[in-house]
Length: 199
Image (cartoon, rainbow, N blue to C red; front, side, top):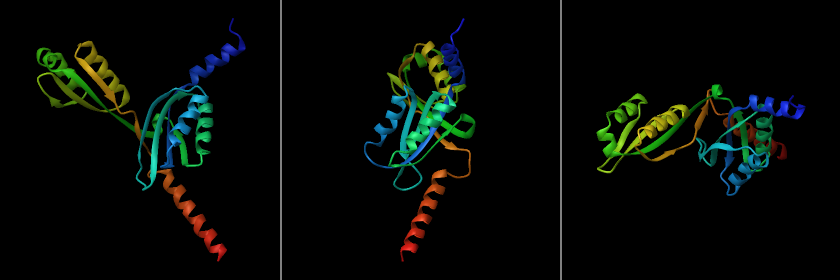
């Protein structure tokens, strides 16, 4: 029979799903290490990490994915929010965001020319060849994570993949605006109010 601790671990593993954390922060050195350390301390593997400038000047956006349970992702998000340079952090499930990836596949040109199946697979996944020479061709695929993985697996089975690289997830929420806009507007309003009270 299973012990109570084993039952608990099994239940937690069943509750795990892929969460996306979107973090907005000011662009200061060292913050990335602080954010990833939160995951390391809880022994959570980061599946993908994408950092870029946001739509707001001076604010950067971190998009992080990880497999975990709801209780843990809530705690992780709260810990990240407490970091001094973090403006906001929120977690989302896949049905709350629109997400995308880009991937590049370097494949052998001789195999591409000799095996019609290679071209068929590329067309099947709506990928496109963006560069080709006598030695290799580069295939570009934009889309969902599963499609990118499946295309790689099918090309690999045709023994033509030389290199493969993917961007990691980029995501936007399905709401009409980013929550950080509200946060910054509220912070600006409070700042003006405090200045007015000082006069």
